[in-house]
Image 1 (cartoon, helix red, strand yellow):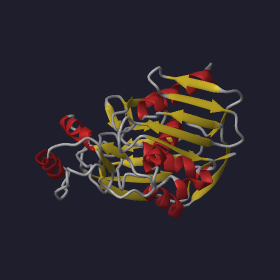
Image 2 (cartoon, one colour):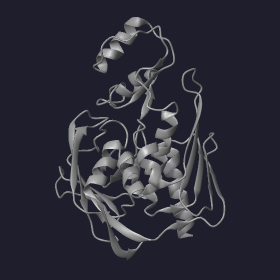
Image 3 (spheres, helix red, strand yellow):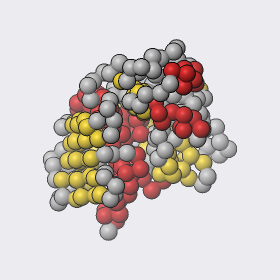
Image 4 (cartoon, one colour):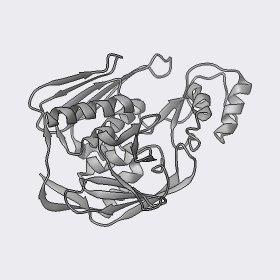
Length: 299
């Protein structure tokens, strides 16, 4: 296979999930062998970092790339869209510490990449070809089994101790189906997580338009009213457990976790030819697996 870049640049603007600030990301074509590079245009010297697992500096509610004390957060949805489109070289210029969360999925990124177009480059692209099964286990219930396969396939299982969101599965057999099956699955969180996340200074830009919020543990109505105000939402009935946004798919949370796996594993820096079966994925686990594969490749 060959390397590829965008045919023309594009920009998308929106809120940062954690800062709540209005941000712009401009994705530009890049020469062969450059990889995916993120550049902070708001900082002196416009420093840049290549999107590789070795540069992951945090995984709290998103994947964070960090270098020399500066960072860029929430890169996984854009990375998934670029990977699915076959883009191996581009520069992502951001005017702040985050990539915009947009609608909480990869849909707007995927649509923008399609409009911009993808141009194949002359140079060949290195692949990570799985020749024998690999099992990765963090000892905390998360596992990834990678098996030989002629193409890239992903199967994800999530399992939460929740009366609303329990065990779900999602799978993708062909990256060409990413657009119609995975791209518009939104990120999610439990309502009971919101207060502690806000206390940590996170999700200031979160709302019911860019995330699925799951209400699975009853709270007093006055507590619900306070959280609704913090989210900028009208009053919510605290007597009814369930999703506070309408689902696009019955298994939308599992589909979004699969999206995250693709975006995080793209930090390998090359396409994978193999089948990934992942149980209880998360950004910390996904990027740890990515580093293990890089170590195996180096060895």
